[in-house]
Length: 556
Image (cartoon, rainbow, N blue to C red; front, side, top):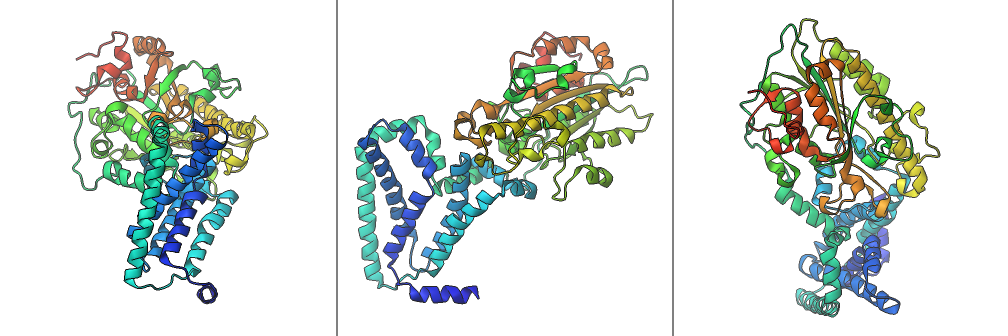
Protein backbone atom coordinates (compact mmCIF):
# COMPACT_ATOMS: atom_id res chain seq x y z
CA UNK A 1 0.00 0.00 0.00
CA UNK A 2 2.73 2.47 0.99
CA UNK A 3 4.84 2.01 -2.19
CA UNK A 4 1.77 2.64 -4.37
CA UNK A 5 0.92 5.79 -2.37
CA UNK A 6 4.46 7.10 -2.78
CA UNK A 7 4.35 6.37 -6.49
CA UNK A 8 1.10 8.34 -6.92
CA UNK A 9 2.53 11.26 -4.95
CA UNK A 10 5.69 11.22 -7.06
CA UNK A 11 3.62 11.37 -10.23
CA UNK A 12 1.77 14.47 -9.01
CA UNK A 13 4.91 16.41 -8.04
CA UNK A 14 6.78 18.37 -10.67
CA UNK A 15 10.36 17.07 -11.07
CA UNK A 16 13.21 19.33 -9.99
CA UNK A 17 16.79 19.46 -11.17
CA UNK A 18 19.64 17.88 -9.26
CA UNK A 19 21.00 21.35 -8.52
CA UNK A 20 17.71 22.38 -6.94
CA UNK A 21 17.64 19.15 -4.94
CA UNK A 22 21.14 19.84 -3.60
CA UNK A 23 20.17 23.37 -2.57
CA UNK A 24 17.04 22.16 -0.77
CA UNK A 25 19.05 19.50 1.06
CA UNK A 26 21.76 22.00 2.01
CA UNK A 27 19.15 24.46 3.31
CA UNK A 28 17.43 21.78 5.40
CA UNK A 29 20.64 20.42 6.90
CA UNK A 30 22.08 23.87 7.46
CA UNK A 31 18.99 25.58 8.90
CA UNK A 32 16.59 23.05 10.42
CA UNK A 33 19.10 20.98 12.38
CA UNK A 34 21.44 23.55 13.86
CA UNK A 35 19.47 25.85 16.14
CA UNK A 36 21.80 25.21 19.09
CA UNK A 37 24.85 26.11 17.01
CA UNK A 38 23.34 29.35 15.77
CA UNK A 39 22.21 30.24 19.30
CA UNK A 40 25.78 29.88 20.49
CA UNK A 41 27.06 31.98 17.59
CA UNK A 42 24.55 34.68 18.47
CA UNK A 43 25.73 34.67 22.10
CA UNK A 44 29.38 34.87 21.08
CA UNK A 45 29.06 37.47 18.34
CA UNK A 46 30.98 40.69 19.09
CA UNK A 47 28.25 42.79 17.48
CA UNK A 48 25.00 44.37 18.63
CA UNK A 49 21.78 45.26 16.84
CA UNK A 50 21.46 44.84 13.05
CA UNK A 51 25.12 43.94 12.62
CA UNK A 52 24.69 41.00 14.97
CA UNK A 53 21.85 39.65 12.83
CA UNK A 54 23.96 40.23 9.71
CA UNK A 55 26.76 38.16 11.27
CA UNK A 56 24.29 35.42 12.15
CA UNK A 57 22.85 35.43 8.61
CA UNK A 58 26.39 35.21 7.22
CA UNK A 59 27.04 32.18 9.42
CA UNK A 60 23.90 30.48 8.12
CA UNK A 61 25.02 31.15 4.54
CA UNK A 62 28.49 29.76 5.28
CA UNK A 63 27.03 26.47 6.55
CA UNK A 64 24.56 26.15 3.66
CA UNK A 65 27.19 27.08 1.06
CA UNK A 66 29.63 24.55 2.51
CA UNK A 67 27.08 21.74 2.28
CA UNK A 68 26.05 22.75 -1.24
CA UNK A 69 29.68 22.80 -2.35
CA UNK A 70 30.27 19.30 -0.98
CA UNK A 71 27.11 17.98 -2.65
CA UNK A 72 28.40 19.00 -6.08
CA UNK A 73 31.06 16.31 -5.77
CA UNK A 74 29.07 13.50 -4.15
CA UNK A 75 25.44 13.94 -5.23
CA UNK A 76 24.59 12.66 -8.67
CA UNK A 77 21.14 11.79 -9.95
CA UNK A 78 21.34 8.14 -8.94
CA UNK A 79 23.21 8.70 -5.64
CA UNK A 80 21.66 11.93 -4.36
CA UNK A 81 18.73 10.33 -2.58
CA UNK A 82 20.86 7.64 -0.94
CA UNK A 83 23.22 10.25 0.48
CA UNK A 84 20.23 12.36 1.51
CA UNK A 85 18.69 9.46 3.46
CA UNK A 86 21.97 8.84 5.29
CA UNK A 87 22.46 12.52 6.14
CA UNK A 88 18.85 13.05 7.18
CA UNK A 89 18.93 10.07 9.53
CA UNK A 90 22.36 10.83 10.91
CA UNK A 91 21.79 14.57 11.23
CA UNK A 92 18.20 14.35 12.42
CA UNK A 93 18.86 12.06 15.36
CA UNK A 94 22.10 13.69 16.51
CA UNK A 95 20.49 17.13 16.22
CA UNK A 96 17.90 16.00 18.79
CA UNK A 97 20.57 15.42 21.41
CA UNK A 98 22.43 18.60 20.50
CA UNK A 99 19.41 20.90 20.41
CA UNK A 100 17.33 19.31 23.18
CA UNK A 101 19.97 18.12 25.65
CA UNK A 102 22.99 20.27 24.90
CA UNK A 103 25.05 17.15 24.13
CA UNK A 104 28.23 17.72 22.12
CA UNK A 105 28.85 15.04 19.52
CA UNK A 106 32.44 13.96 20.12
CA UNK A 107 34.46 10.74 19.67
CA UNK A 108 33.64 9.98 23.31
CA UNK A 109 29.92 10.17 22.55
CA UNK A 110 30.39 7.85 19.56
CA UNK A 111 32.18 5.44 21.89
CA UNK A 112 29.26 5.63 24.33
CA UNK A 113 26.88 4.84 21.49
CA UNK A 114 28.95 1.86 20.36
CA UNK A 115 29.04 0.42 23.89
CA UNK A 116 25.46 1.15 24.96
CA UNK A 117 22.89 -1.54 25.64
CA UNK A 118 19.14 -1.82 24.89
CA UNK A 119 18.17 -0.64 28.39
CA UNK A 120 20.14 2.59 27.98
CA UNK A 121 18.58 3.15 24.57
CA UNK A 122 15.13 2.60 26.03
CA UNK A 123 15.79 5.25 28.67
CA UNK A 124 16.33 7.81 25.90
CA UNK A 125 12.95 7.17 24.25
CA UNK A 126 10.28 9.76 25.04
CA UNK A 127 7.28 11.43 23.43
CA UNK A 128 9.45 14.44 22.61
CA UNK A 129 12.00 12.18 20.92
CA UNK A 130 9.29 10.40 18.93
CA UNK A 131 7.75 13.68 17.75
CA UNK A 132 11.20 14.98 16.79
CA UNK A 133 11.91 11.78 14.86
CA UNK A 134 8.64 12.05 12.94
CA UNK A 135 8.97 15.75 12.08
CA UNK A 136 12.70 16.06 11.49
CA UNK A 137 13.69 12.58 10.31
CA UNK A 138 10.88 10.49 8.84
CA UNK A 139 8.82 13.21 7.15
CA UNK A 140 11.90 14.69 5.39
CA UNK A 141 12.84 11.18 4.26
CA UNK A 142 9.34 10.64 2.83
CA UNK A 143 9.55 14.03 1.11
CA UNK A 144 12.87 13.08 -0.50
CA UNK A 145 11.47 9.68 -1.50
CA UNK A 146 8.52 11.18 -3.42
CA UNK A 147 10.44 14.13 -4.89
CA UNK A 148 11.37 13.25 -8.49
CA UNK A 149 14.72 14.38 -9.88
CA UNK A 150 14.55 15.12 -13.58
CA UNK A 151 16.93 13.52 -16.02
CA UNK A 152 19.48 15.83 -17.64
CA UNK A 153 22.23 15.49 -20.16
CA UNK A 154 25.57 14.86 -18.49
CA UNK A 155 27.03 17.97 -20.12
CA UNK A 156 24.23 20.16 -18.75
CA UNK A 157 24.53 18.55 -15.35
CA UNK A 158 28.29 19.10 -15.22
CA UNK A 159 27.89 22.71 -16.26
CA UNK A 160 25.37 23.36 -13.49
CA UNK A 161 27.58 21.58 -10.96
CA UNK A 162 30.54 23.76 -11.91
CA UNK A 163 28.40 26.89 -11.66
CA UNK A 164 26.96 25.96 -8.25
CA UNK A 165 30.34 24.88 -6.96
CA UNK A 166 31.86 28.19 -8.08
CA UNK A 167 29.10 30.31 -6.53
CA UNK A 168 29.17 28.32 -3.29
CA UNK A 169 32.95 28.53 -3.11
CA UNK A 170 32.99 32.29 -3.73
CA UNK A 171 30.21 32.87 -1.20
CA UNK A 172 31.95 30.67 1.36
CA UNK A 173 35.38 32.24 0.93
CA UNK A 174 33.99 35.76 0.69
CA UNK A 175 32.04 35.58 3.94
CA UNK A 176 34.89 33.85 5.76
CA UNK A 177 37.24 36.59 4.53
CA UNK A 178 34.93 39.41 5.59
CA UNK A 179 34.35 37.99 9.07
CA UNK A 180 37.66 36.16 9.40
CA UNK A 181 38.78 37.95 12.56
CA UNK A 182 35.45 37.26 14.26
CA UNK A 183 35.31 33.58 13.28
CA UNK A 184 38.96 33.05 14.21
CA UNK A 185 38.44 34.57 17.65
CA UNK A 186 35.23 32.61 18.32
CA UNK A 187 36.43 29.20 17.14
CA UNK A 188 39.88 29.59 18.68
CA UNK A 189 38.33 30.05 22.11
CA UNK A 190 35.39 27.70 21.53
CA UNK A 191 36.70 24.77 19.51
CA UNK A 192 33.81 22.65 20.72
CA UNK A 193 31.36 24.63 18.55
CA UNK A 194 32.00 22.35 15.59
CA UNK A 195 30.55 19.46 17.61
CA UNK A 196 27.17 21.26 17.49
CA UNK A 197 26.90 21.31 13.67
CA UNK A 198 24.83 18.38 12.39
CA UNK A 199 25.46 16.12 10.57
CA UNK A 200 29.14 16.97 10.11
CA UNK A 201 29.67 16.49 13.85
CA UNK A 202 28.65 12.84 13.62
CA UNK A 203 30.78 12.20 10.55
CA UNK A 204 33.83 13.89 12.06
CA UNK A 205 33.43 12.29 15.50
CA UNK A 206 32.86 8.82 14.02
CA UNK A 207 35.94 9.14 11.82
CA UNK A 208 38.02 10.29 14.79
CA UNK A 209 36.69 7.43 16.94
CA UNK A 210 37.60 4.74 14.42
CA UNK A 211 40.98 6.33 13.72
CA UNK A 212 42.05 6.71 17.35
CA UNK A 213 39.73 5.04 19.83
CA UNK A 214 37.97 2.03 18.34
CA UNK A 215 39.40 -1.12 19.93
CA UNK A 216 41.44 -3.22 17.53
CA UNK A 217 40.52 -6.88 17.38
CA UNK A 218 42.77 -9.88 18.02
CA UNK A 219 45.53 -7.91 19.73
CA UNK A 220 47.73 -10.08 21.99
CA UNK A 221 47.20 -9.67 25.73
CA UNK A 222 49.99 -7.63 27.30
CA UNK A 223 50.86 -8.99 30.74
CA UNK A 224 51.37 -6.37 33.41
CA UNK A 225 52.59 -6.58 36.98
CA UNK A 226 53.94 -10.11 36.61
CA UNK A 227 55.95 -9.70 39.82
CA UNK A 228 52.81 -9.07 41.92
CA UNK A 229 52.75 -10.93 45.22
CA UNK A 230 51.31 -10.60 48.71
CA UNK A 231 53.64 -9.14 51.32
CA UNK A 232 52.50 -11.72 53.84
CA UNK A 233 50.23 -14.70 53.43
CA UNK A 234 47.16 -15.15 55.57
CA UNK A 235 47.79 -17.16 58.73
CA UNK A 236 45.39 -18.88 61.07
CA UNK A 237 45.90 -16.11 63.61
CA UNK A 238 45.11 -13.26 61.21
CA UNK A 239 41.90 -12.64 59.31
CA UNK A 240 42.10 -12.39 55.51
CA UNK A 241 41.09 -9.14 53.84
CA UNK A 242 37.80 -8.59 52.02
CA UNK A 243 37.66 -5.36 50.06
CA UNK A 244 34.44 -4.31 48.33
CA UNK A 245 34.99 -1.69 45.65
CA UNK A 246 31.83 0.04 44.46
CA UNK A 247 31.99 1.70 41.05
CA UNK A 248 29.21 4.28 41.06
CA UNK A 249 27.39 5.60 38.02
CA UNK A 250 26.76 9.25 37.15
CA UNK A 251 27.02 10.54 40.72
CA UNK A 252 28.49 14.02 41.12
CA UNK A 253 30.21 15.29 44.23
CA UNK A 254 28.31 18.57 44.42
CA UNK A 255 25.04 16.68 44.99
CA UNK A 256 26.36 14.91 48.11
CA UNK A 257 25.43 16.66 51.35
CA UNK A 258 28.65 15.15 52.73
CA UNK A 259 30.37 17.72 50.50
CA UNK A 260 28.22 20.64 51.61
CA UNK A 261 25.15 20.29 49.38
CA UNK A 262 22.21 22.08 51.01
CA UNK A 263 19.72 19.21 50.58
CA UNK A 264 20.25 16.20 52.84
CA UNK A 265 21.11 13.56 50.26
CA UNK A 266 23.27 11.49 52.65
CA UNK A 267 21.06 10.90 55.69
CA UNK A 268 22.50 7.43 56.39
CA UNK A 269 26.17 7.73 55.40
CA UNK A 270 26.51 10.91 57.47
CA UNK A 271 25.92 8.81 60.60
CA UNK A 272 28.71 6.33 59.81
CA UNK A 273 32.44 6.45 60.45
CA UNK A 274 33.46 6.96 56.85
CA UNK A 275 36.29 8.86 55.19
CA UNK A 276 34.81 11.29 52.66
CA UNK A 277 37.18 12.64 50.01
CA UNK A 278 35.73 15.92 48.79
CA UNK A 279 38.09 16.91 45.96
CA UNK A 280 38.22 13.97 43.53
CA UNK A 281 38.17 14.14 39.73
CA UNK A 282 37.33 11.46 37.16
CA UNK A 283 39.47 10.13 34.35
CA UNK A 284 36.73 10.72 31.78
CA UNK A 285 33.19 11.97 31.42
CA UNK A 286 31.71 8.65 30.32
CA UNK A 287 31.72 5.08 31.64
CA UNK A 288 33.43 3.76 28.51
CA UNK A 289 36.46 5.92 29.29
CA UNK A 290 36.52 6.20 33.07
CA UNK A 291 36.07 2.54 34.00
CA UNK A 292 38.89 1.07 31.87
CA UNK A 293 41.07 4.08 32.72
CA UNK A 294 40.75 3.78 36.51
CA UNK A 295 41.62 0.07 36.39
CA UNK A 296 44.44 0.41 33.82
CA UNK A 297 47.23 1.80 35.99
CA UNK A 298 47.70 4.68 33.56
CA UNK A 299 47.11 8.25 34.78
CA UNK A 300 44.52 10.27 32.88
CA UNK A 301 47.06 12.47 31.10
CA UNK A 302 48.90 9.40 29.74
CA UNK A 303 45.91 7.14 29.24
CA UNK A 304 46.12 5.03 26.07
CA UNK A 305 42.75 3.47 25.35
CA UNK A 306 44.12 1.07 22.77
CA UNK A 307 46.74 -0.26 25.17
CA UNK A 308 44.25 -0.52 28.03
CA UNK A 309 41.95 -2.64 25.86
CA UNK A 310 44.48 -5.48 25.65
CA UNK A 311 46.68 -5.05 28.74
CA UNK A 312 46.18 -6.55 32.18
CA UNK A 313 44.96 -4.16 34.84
CA UNK A 314 44.28 -3.80 38.54
CA UNK A 315 41.99 -6.83 38.83
CA UNK A 316 44.42 -9.10 36.97
CA UNK A 317 47.26 -8.02 39.25
CA UNK A 318 45.24 -8.56 42.44
CA UNK A 319 44.24 -11.98 41.15
CA UNK A 320 47.84 -12.89 40.32
CA UNK A 321 48.93 -11.87 43.81
CA UNK A 322 46.49 -14.30 45.39
CA UNK A 323 43.16 -12.54 45.70
CA UNK A 324 39.88 -14.08 44.60
CA UNK A 325 38.50 -11.29 42.40
CA UNK A 326 34.80 -11.12 41.53
CA UNK A 327 32.81 -8.57 39.53
CA UNK A 328 29.06 -8.18 40.25
CA UNK A 329 27.32 -5.98 37.69
CA UNK A 330 24.10 -3.98 37.65
CA UNK A 331 25.07 -1.80 34.72
CA UNK A 332 26.20 -2.24 31.14
CA UNK A 333 29.33 -4.28 31.81
CA UNK A 334 32.89 -3.65 32.90
CA UNK A 335 34.21 -2.27 29.58
CA UNK A 336 36.96 -4.91 29.53
CA UNK A 337 38.24 -4.35 33.08
CA UNK A 338 36.90 -7.69 34.38
CA UNK A 339 37.36 -9.89 31.32
CA UNK A 340 39.78 -12.29 33.04
CA UNK A 341 38.24 -12.53 36.52
CA UNK A 342 35.08 -14.15 37.87
CA UNK A 343 31.87 -12.42 36.79
CA UNK A 344 29.19 -13.33 39.28
CA UNK A 345 25.91 -14.63 37.85
CA UNK A 346 23.11 -13.11 39.90
CA UNK A 347 20.60 -15.81 40.96
CA UNK A 348 17.19 -15.58 39.31
CA UNK A 349 15.22 -15.20 42.59
CA UNK A 350 17.25 -12.07 43.36
CA UNK A 351 16.60 -10.74 39.86
CA UNK A 352 12.89 -11.39 40.25
CA UNK A 353 12.90 -9.35 43.45
CA UNK A 354 14.69 -6.26 42.18
CA UNK A 355 14.30 -6.14 38.38
CA UNK A 356 11.53 -4.61 36.30
CA UNK A 357 10.04 -6.24 33.21
CA UNK A 358 12.33 -4.19 30.97
CA UNK A 359 15.35 -5.82 32.63
CA UNK A 360 16.55 -2.81 34.61
CA UNK A 361 17.25 -3.52 38.28
CA UNK A 362 17.45 -1.41 41.41
CA UNK A 363 20.86 -1.30 43.04
CA UNK A 364 19.68 -3.20 46.10
CA UNK A 365 20.16 -6.23 43.87
CA UNK A 366 23.87 -5.76 44.57
CA UNK A 367 23.28 -6.05 48.32
CA UNK A 368 21.41 -9.34 48.03
CA UNK A 369 23.96 -10.61 45.52
CA UNK A 370 26.84 -9.81 47.87
CA UNK A 371 25.03 -11.55 50.73
CA UNK A 372 24.52 -14.64 48.57
CA UNK A 373 28.14 -14.53 47.41
CA UNK A 374 29.48 -14.32 50.98
CA UNK A 375 27.12 -17.02 52.24
CA UNK A 376 28.50 -19.45 49.65
CA UNK A 377 32.12 -19.12 50.85
CA UNK A 378 33.22 -22.23 52.83
CA UNK A 379 34.04 -21.55 56.48
CA UNK A 380 37.59 -22.86 56.12
CA UNK A 381 38.32 -20.71 53.05
CA UNK A 382 40.95 -18.12 54.01
CA UNK A 383 41.46 -16.66 50.53
CA UNK A 384 41.59 -12.86 50.56
CA UNK A 385 38.90 -11.39 48.31
CA UNK A 386 38.28 -8.31 46.18
CA UNK A 387 34.68 -7.83 45.09
CA UNK A 388 33.69 -5.07 42.65
CA UNK A 389 30.07 -3.91 42.57
CA UNK A 390 29.05 -1.89 39.51
CA UNK A 391 26.02 0.28 40.19
CA UNK A 392 23.22 1.57 38.01
CA UNK A 393 23.48 4.58 40.30
CA UNK A 394 22.05 7.80 38.89
CA UNK A 395 22.15 6.86 35.22
CA UNK A 396 20.01 9.28 33.24
CA UNK A 397 17.94 10.57 31.76
CA UNK A 398 15.37 8.40 33.60
CA UNK A 399 16.51 9.52 37.06
CA UNK A 400 13.05 8.87 38.49
CA UNK A 401 13.61 5.14 37.91
CA UNK A 402 16.82 5.09 39.96
CA UNK A 403 15.21 5.13 43.40
CA UNK A 404 12.41 3.34 45.21
CA UNK A 405 9.50 5.12 46.91
CA UNK A 406 10.95 5.11 50.46
CA UNK A 407 14.01 7.02 49.17
CA UNK A 408 12.29 9.81 47.24
CA UNK A 409 12.06 12.64 49.79
CA UNK A 410 12.27 15.47 47.28
CA UNK A 411 9.06 16.48 45.50
CA UNK A 412 7.80 17.41 42.96
CA UNK A 413 10.01 15.27 40.75
CA UNK A 414 10.63 14.89 37.04
CA UNK A 415 8.90 11.56 36.35
CA UNK A 416 9.88 11.29 32.69
CA UNK A 417 12.98 10.68 30.62
CA UNK A 418 12.22 13.81 28.54
CA UNK A 419 14.07 15.80 31.19
CA UNK A 420 14.44 18.96 29.11
CA UNK A 421 10.69 19.49 29.53
CA UNK A 422 10.85 19.50 33.35
CA UNK A 423 11.54 22.49 35.53
CA UNK A 424 15.01 22.79 37.00
CA UNK A 425 13.74 22.08 40.53
CA UNK A 426 11.81 18.97 39.40
CA UNK A 427 14.82 17.63 37.54
CA UNK A 428 17.15 18.21 40.49
CA UNK A 429 14.66 16.55 42.84
CA UNK A 430 14.64 13.38 40.71
CA UNK A 431 18.42 13.36 40.45
CA UNK A 432 18.83 14.04 44.18
CA UNK A 433 16.44 11.19 45.01
CA UNK A 434 18.76 8.86 43.10
CA UNK A 435 21.63 10.06 45.30
CA UNK A 436 19.53 9.41 48.43
CA UNK A 437 18.95 5.87 47.17
CA UNK A 438 22.67 5.41 46.53
CA UNK A 439 23.27 6.66 50.08
CA UNK A 440 20.97 3.91 51.36
CA UNK A 441 22.62 1.22 49.22
CA UNK A 442 26.13 2.19 50.32
CA UNK A 443 25.24 2.46 54.02
CA UNK A 444 23.49 -0.93 53.86
CA UNK A 445 26.57 -2.39 52.19
CA UNK A 446 28.73 -1.08 55.03
CA UNK A 447 26.28 -2.72 57.43
CA UNK A 448 26.82 -6.08 55.69
CA UNK A 449 30.60 -5.71 55.92
CA UNK A 450 30.44 -4.52 59.52
CA UNK A 451 28.59 -7.68 60.58
CA UNK A 452 31.09 -9.98 58.84
CA UNK A 453 33.54 -11.48 61.35
CA UNK A 454 35.39 -13.82 58.96
CA UNK A 455 37.40 -11.02 57.30
CA UNK A 456 39.05 -7.70 57.78
CA UNK A 457 36.51 -5.79 55.69
CA UNK A 458 37.03 -2.61 53.72
CA UNK A 459 34.85 -0.49 51.47
CA UNK A 460 35.82 1.97 48.72
CA UNK A 461 33.25 3.85 46.65
CA UNK A 462 33.87 6.22 43.77
CA UNK A 463 31.70 7.25 40.85
CA UNK A 464 32.80 6.78 37.26
CA UNK A 465 31.89 10.36 36.29
CA UNK A 466 29.39 13.08 37.12
CA UNK A 467 26.34 14.52 35.37
CA UNK A 468 24.99 17.78 33.99
CA UNK A 469 21.38 18.60 34.83
CA UNK A 470 20.86 21.75 32.78
CA UNK A 471 23.82 23.81 33.95
CA UNK A 472 25.17 25.89 31.04
CA UNK A 473 22.37 24.40 28.93
CA UNK A 474 23.96 20.93 29.14
CA UNK A 475 22.40 17.63 30.18
CA UNK A 476 23.74 14.12 30.80
CA UNK A 477 27.50 13.59 30.38
CA UNK A 478 30.18 12.68 27.84
CA UNK A 479 31.46 16.19 27.04
CA UNK A 480 35.08 16.46 25.86
CA UNK A 481 37.16 16.51 29.04
CA UNK A 482 38.95 19.76 28.21
CA UNK A 483 35.67 21.70 28.22
CA UNK A 484 33.56 19.51 30.51
CA UNK A 485 31.92 21.37 33.40
CA UNK A 486 32.78 20.38 36.97
CA UNK A 487 29.40 18.65 37.28
CA UNK A 488 30.73 15.95 34.93
CA UNK A 489 34.26 15.57 36.36
CA UNK A 490 33.99 16.24 40.12
CA UNK A 491 33.02 12.90 41.66
CA UNK A 492 32.30 11.54 45.16
CA UNK A 493 34.69 9.10 46.82
CA UNK A 494 34.24 7.35 50.19
CA UNK A 495 36.03 4.72 52.27
CA UNK A 496 35.15 2.69 55.35
CA UNK A 497 37.11 0.06 57.26
CA UNK A 498 36.06 -2.46 59.89
CA UNK A 499 37.45 -2.46 63.43
CA UNK A 500 39.55 -5.51 62.51
CA UNK A 501 41.10 -3.59 59.60
CA UNK A 502 41.66 -0.57 61.89
CA UNK A 503 43.42 -2.76 64.43
CA UNK A 504 45.69 -4.43 61.91
CA UNK A 505 46.42 -1.33 59.79
CA UNK A 506 46.06 1.83 61.93
CA UNK A 507 48.72 3.78 60.02
CA UNK A 508 46.87 3.22 56.73
CA UNK A 509 43.63 4.63 58.11
CA UNK A 510 45.35 7.67 59.63
CA UNK A 511 47.17 8.36 56.37
CA UNK A 512 44.00 8.21 54.29
CA UNK A 513 42.09 10.39 56.74
CA UNK A 514 44.71 13.11 56.41
CA UNK A 515 44.00 13.35 52.66
CA UNK A 516 40.20 13.73 52.73
CA UNK A 517 40.37 17.40 51.65
CA UNK A 518 43.26 17.07 49.20
CA UNK A 519 42.93 17.06 45.42
CA UNK A 520 42.76 13.45 44.27
CA UNK A 521 41.55 11.56 41.20
CA UNK A 522 40.78 8.14 39.81
CA UNK A 523 44.52 7.93 39.11
CA UNK A 524 44.92 7.13 42.82
CA UNK A 525 42.78 3.99 42.69
CA UNK A 526 45.21 1.57 41.05
CA UNK A 527 48.28 2.04 43.29
CA UNK A 528 46.39 2.82 46.50
CA UNK A 529 44.00 -0.14 46.34
CA UNK A 530 46.77 -2.61 45.60
CA UNK A 531 48.74 -1.23 48.55
CA UNK A 532 45.70 -1.52 50.82
CA UNK A 533 45.45 -5.16 49.73
CA UNK A 534 49.13 -5.74 50.69
CA UNK A 535 50.08 -6.39 47.07
CA UNK A 536 53.66 -5.61 46.09
CA UNK A 537 54.65 -4.90 42.46
CA UNK A 538 57.01 -2.68 40.53
CA UNK A 539 54.05 -1.28 38.56
CA UNK A 540 52.62 0.46 41.65
CA UNK A 541 53.29 4.15 41.01
CA UNK A 542 54.38 5.88 44.21
CA UNK A 543 53.41 9.33 42.90
CA UNK A 544 49.71 8.43 42.86
CA UNK A 545 49.81 6.05 45.81
CA UNK A 546 47.85 7.72 48.61
CA UNK A 547 49.53 5.49 51.19
CA UNK A 548 52.99 6.73 50.27
CA UNK A 549 52.07 10.38 50.77
CA UNK A 550 52.44 9.93 54.54
CA UNK A 551 55.79 8.20 54.33
CA UNK A 552 54.30 4.73 54.66
CA UNK A 553 56.36 2.07 52.93
CA UNK A 554 55.49 -1.49 52.06
CA UNK A 555 57.54 -4.35 53.31
CA UNK A 556 59.75 -6.04 50.79
